[in-house]
Amino acid sequence: MPGQIVRKTILANARHIVVKLGTNAICGPTGRLEVKSVRSLARQIAEVKKAGVSVTLVASGAIGAGLAELDLPARPKTIPMLQATAAVGQGQLMRTFHDAMGRSGVKVGQVLITAEDFEDRTRYLNIRNTLTALHEADVLPIINENDATAIYEIRFGDNDIIAAHVTNMLSADVLVLLTTVDGVFKGKELLDVIEQVDDEALSLATDQRSTHGSGGMATKLQAAGVVTRAGGTVVIANARQPKVLTRLLKGENFGTVFVPAKRRLSSRRRWIGMTAKPAGKIIVDAGAVRALCKGGKSLLPSGIVGVEGHFAPGATVSIQDEAGNEIARGLTNYSADHVEKIKGLRTSQVAKVLGDFGKPYDEVVHRNNMTIS
Image 1 (tube, helix red, strand yellow):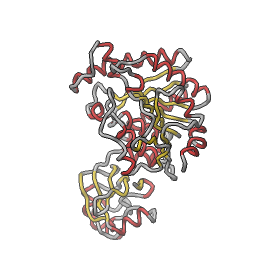
Image 2 (cartoon, rainbow, N blue to C red):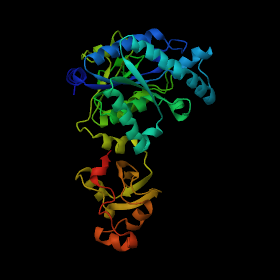
Image 3 (cartoon, one colour):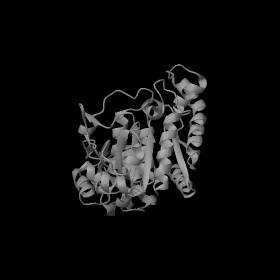
Image 4 (spheres, rainbow, N blue to C red):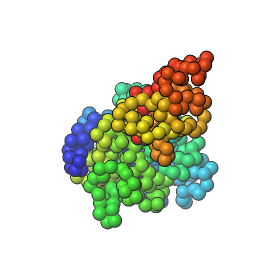
């Protein structure tokens, strides 16, 4: 699907978008928050909202705001000092957004999260309910990592990944990743469109992270893969482009767009397949691989050859072939111990083997609780 078609048919008709602002998009050369940049983006978001588009904002910059408040010459090197700087800067960041959005009559609400919040189904649903309620109250949700307590997220730039999970959680049409580069490059060529986030696409990222943030193009490409595989659209563009957001949503030709997969997954299947952390692995034979991937079948005990990890009924498991390739994820009806006992058996044999436990389900993982990778 050519990039221009995506722009005209999807971006120009989007009704719900998630916008992720990178640290460098709203911070200056010294790493400190630039109020002027925030105000410019605030005006664009207000204009988009007035046009009837629902907006959810994922914003980095707490550490940059903390630099100015603590009068630090540069981004700290140690994790504890990064966390302390974020703790100081978080309030300043929200105050800046509050004041900038207020100029355009937009109310804001802050939601602090970490990657772990998405892995637990109950917490995941609570976040979604909160965001939905904020939208219903015509409040702009501003999401940020809880950098004051997170360690992995600070070091690896997971605001990109969090933005992808938020996009899938809300079944938003488009994820807009605003950074300080014009898009994805292959050598010196700016790519107009990327049709699939495969190994070739991921190789376009360099190991270099952003100057003041903790992410880089690698995490943006990973985020694009999470969203597009679920049926959403992604665009990476330069936040310094004049009126970048409003122009993108008019279908103008700049930045790099990522084509969505043909299938559009439900929010629940997105959580199972792309958000929940697997508690263990179930290894299946070639016949089961064919039945799951081509036949759309449930996973029965007869196709299972191995189990790894310790998990309870209802846990998310990774379903892998015998070569170790993940072919699906799903919610298991049985514990790891019970799967170990019934692997390779016909359905009619399960109740006898499990004794008092009986056979509550024919399927180890039902197709309705499974997402094919």
